Each structure stands twice: as structure tokens, then as C-alpha cells.
Length: 463
Image (tube, rainbow, N blue to C red):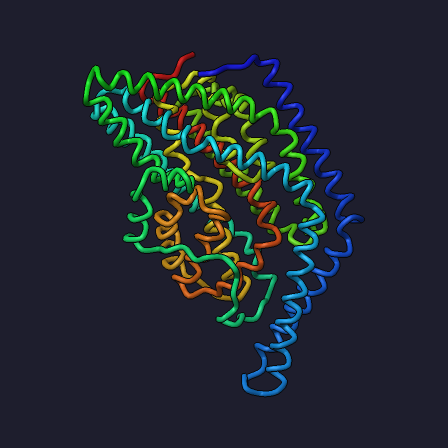
């Protein structure tokens, strides 16, 4: 695969860190001056809507004049709040557009990169038994990691009980959160897994569907023998071209990091860290515990090289953290794992699968967020119910890598399934971008460790 000098890589990492710090500083200034009026307006209208919602909840007769007056006022406040949000977004557009362009460029290459690298990786195995063996080991690690991530989230939210201090009244069941609920049925999951068309799946960046087609394509290419070698060479060349494009795009990463951080801090401000400080601290503590477990499990297989691996992937982790997108770090992670010594075929096979089956950070957040919302409304969930939620999330968390705000979408579906207040999602909206940073970074770390471990299992990890 395409390589660059360590010196150049170190410079890019330094530039990204500088951009991250600069983005926080500029974002804080923007929050206190440039968009201060808009933020104040949004904050006041949000508080007023919350007050009216509580008053509406206490009125039994929904046909009374007072109820209708309050409902009308709530609609007016919501419309005014939306106008203020649009105005603020317009003012911050020069900053957010930097991150948006970078993410669009990354999404432009992710689908073809996943397809070409995975198809070539499977075809080069040349033996469907080898594909099955490696696939079995990979999925075993993924599902074990998924269970651990979800279980840690469940344990910590029960230990810290961050939602109990909220003491919120049950919201109106008709409250709209604006988040589309994901389907939780096995039928819908299977339909989502198998593509109608490769081009449709690639156009929508449906990673799981691309993975399924690439597996069939790779096995079939290996099965036709010498004729398939031409296809393998062509696909391999295309993958190299795409990775070369990745190198060009990565030069834009510091600007994207600066714009993303400036926009997030300008909108949320540092005040939100104080308001939700306990929840944020407890969640990030959970991520650190999960990181420790992953490092311990990884070191059991690759020994002290786990620290070298973490050093190798620091740049993809920073990119994922600052852009809140593990997808943005995919091409760079692919390169760094090969430089670390992982077999090219195994990297091409395991890493794309990881983006559908091994989102460790996101999965921990799903149990943490779901149970937090139940606690906020004083709803007690027994151990059996919580275990059931965990097992449901084991299924519904798969294949959502390309879904916008995927974790919130899955949480919304879980709330509906277990008859919990879906309006509780509003409690997470304000801090979700800050939490998404940690989730995305942990997703990259989890997939990188999984790839290294599977390479070691196959005796394909170079020193």
C-alpha cells in the first residue's frame, strides 16, 4: 500500500493537534461574542418550552382554554427557536463547511475503498475455508467485544445513576424528537444487510451491504482461477489509487479539525460541560475503562506491541475524535495497520467488517444512554429487563455505521420497544456531539486492536 515517511506523518499529527486546540479557542470566542445573542435566544426559548411542557403535563383537561393557549405558545416558541438555530448555523457556516467538505471527500472514497480492499483480500485467500476460518475468528472477537462494551455501559450507569438527580416528570407521549426510530425486527435487519444494488449501497455508503457484496465477489473471483487474477490485479491497482487520493485528502484534515471544533464549541459553549459535567465525566470514565479492557485483551495476544499499535493509530484516533466520525479515519487506519505489520489481506477483510459489527464506543453509549433516560424519569428497570435491552442492542447496533446520528437512532428504537419515553432523547441532544467524539475514537481503537489480534491468530503479524 501507499506509504509516507514517518516525519511527514508526525508533522500532520502535530498540525492536527494544533488545529484542535486553535478550534477550541476560536470556538470559545465565537460563543461569547459572534453568536452570543443567538445562543441566548435558543437557551431562553428552550427553557420556556420546557416550562410549558411541564404545565401542559399537569393539566388534565386537554380541551380547556388554558391548555390550548399554552399549546399555541409552545408552537410559537418552537418556531422562534428554529429560526434562531438557522441564523446561528448560517453565521457559523464558514467554519462548519471546512469539516463538511472533508467528510464528504472521505465518504467519496470510503465505499470504493471498502469494496476493492475487501474483495481483493478475500480473493487472495484463494480458499473459501480460509475465509470462513478468519471470518469466524473475527466475528467471535467482535461479538465478545460488543457484549463487553454493552455490559460495561450497563454496569456503570447502574453504579453512577447519573439520571436519578434529574427528577423529570413523564413527558407527553406525542412529543416529537426529530430522530427517526430504527427498526428492531430481525426481518428489517436482514433486509438492511443484503443490497438491492451494489451501486445503490455505494451511493448511500451502506458499509454492511458493500461488505456482503464484496465477500461474494471475492470468493467468486478466486473460484474462477487464472481469469480471476486479472480482476484481482485491477482491483488491487484501484485500491492503491484510492489510497493515494486518501493521502491528498488527509492534507486537508487540520483545516477540517479546526472548523469542526470551532463550530461545536461555538454552538455548545463550555458552559454545557458544567451543566452535564457529571454525565460527561462518567461516560468518558467508562470509555477509559473500556480502553483498559481492550488493551489488556489485545496485549494477551500481541504482548508489548499493543503500545506500538496505539502509537501507530494516534493520528486516525485524533481525526475520529475531532470530526466525530470513525468513518473519516478509515482510510488512514487501513494504512497504519499495514505499517504496524498486520497482513494486508487480513486488514482488508477485518477492518471493513469492524465498521458494521464492532463499534465498541457507540455500543457502550447505547446502554449508557438508554438506561440514563429511564433513570431521569424515575422508571425502574429490573436486571432481567436490562439484560434483555442489552441483547436487543447486540442485534440492532450492527450495520448502522453509515446512518447519521446512528447511536441516537438505535437508542430511539430501543426506547420505543421497551415503552420508555422517547422524548428523553432531547436530554442527550445538547451533549451528543461531545460524547460522539469519544465514541468515534473508541470505535477506531477497537477495530484496530481486533485487526491486530486476528492477524496474530493467523500467524500473519510481522515483527
